[in-house]
Length: 216
Image (tube, rainbow, N blue to C red):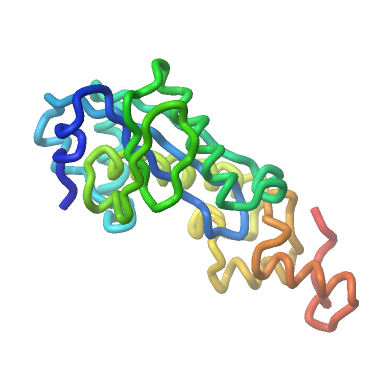
């Protein structure tokens, strides 16, 4: 379980930073930055863990508890266009910078999940597997995941058929089949996996693309 040890070892405002959505075929990458107070209630801390380990219900409960608490929360995103222009790694770094900027005063230290340090205007410490080790990073992972899932659920209403409310844009078999049937939208990442192959098939006239709808 994550602890508060890294935050307490540093004298100053410490933010945990994490992102969600590097791997999907569609949608933005979303990052969150969270500063937890040292006196955060134990009941809230007990809800926090790596977002990937939580059920959707528990993840939502933790998100709502964070929103209702004294935690400082910043959220940022990078669009599909920015992912294409920058590549997914640098787009994720951009989303992290935007999340930290929305905290207001820049924190004294950012604990960032992973091994690549973004430029955040403050000291940065990378923590590999940080969402399972550090409470503020775990909190950021939860916020980023819930915000991104909600974004994809809203897009699913406007672009039905891809199952984004269930798969959040990831490359499930149902999503890949929908791409073949309906074609990609402008929210799909043109250079990612099935989307890139489908576009190549359409250009080459491959039989694999037969039945695909026009590009949206």
